[in-house]
Length: 527
Image: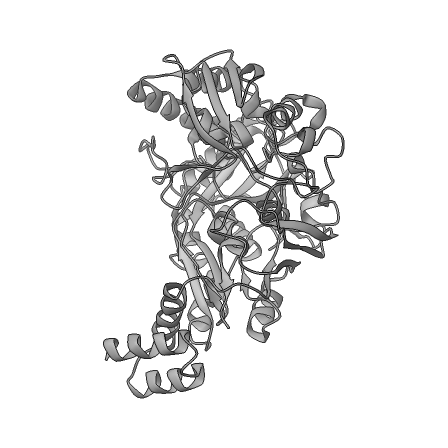
């Protein structure tokens, strides 16, 4: 039966059999719709790339405040877009391995204090100018400047100086950084003409698509750049991202064919979606996590006993089962899980109403705790907050929920209100994850966590050449954050996207959602 279905799926991919006829035969043989769709997707990809057409994606995480400046990219929609029009020195593949991009090769001194990147020749910017080592130098200089407000500033702090040597760019570091090439994959470090110093929001890069539409919070689009240097991506003539913050509206857009792929599927509807003809669920375990953030410098969250009480008052196992429907794993108030190379097991924090009540009383706080919440933060955030409210009540803690609108959440609520949910897709290394969000000087220090010991150990871990010692340092860093930080991290989520019937070329990537942001440029539309 499976051999027959595989044979028929290939005929569909070659245009010799209609999809309707294939699904009819599948039903007659007792093959589930989900399996039939997977067979079609596999066959379509095996036939190889198809060029042409307009490939559309629906994504949440967009607002009117979004910028084309790579330094300021934060939400999911601008992240997905910047992957299409700009590129970094290196790129991490779906196996977690570094691959050359705008840098052909790289190497380091024995102490990992001097790193040399050989810059690729013959690569054009969208304005027709050739990308040079001077552009790379200027890009790194801009992201090292605090005035740029770059989200990559935290990982640039270790750089002492940068220089051009022929076709090479040489980084001299203040201290050893053993994973510097991985840091160069950061999606904020996109190479721009003169580093973006002249026009950071110009949207000029070296990616497969040049910017044609920039309606922040509404629609983003690009057309294939004729001078693109690679042949393994950029198959569609045009790409478009439609910002759809509402989960139901995204699903409707996919079903109707308005878009060909969407991200952030709510786990609670997955079983229903699996039975929709032509729709394929794409889920993979990764580094993404959901969090409830407390501002450590704002009352009442400036009291660690109150923070601990709220950490013990959340039922993590219940959330994984009822919010993620099992598509994820339990969190432990650190952003690091087993997917990271240097992960270490630490004692799991569990739901404990007695400990929550103890720390709550010790904090001296009296009255309710206000939590601002919206499903724009992550799929099912409102339901998660209601479960949290119920579990906290068992500890005598009154959580007051204020539901915020999806539109404007990332510009008006997140990072402004002292207690609200957030979402991170993870980073290639522990160094980068901690440096981006929890280092005191990080632009995205969303919990306002300022801890000198944490910072000192983080800088030490960056340069520790002995992997055993570095692993121990990261364990200690994670312990500090778990016990003193402002992040309540109850769960790590699978990346759950969905594609329509015409999408070929999909490849699961545990580095991030939507093939780590590359889905629009690496996928294609079947004829």
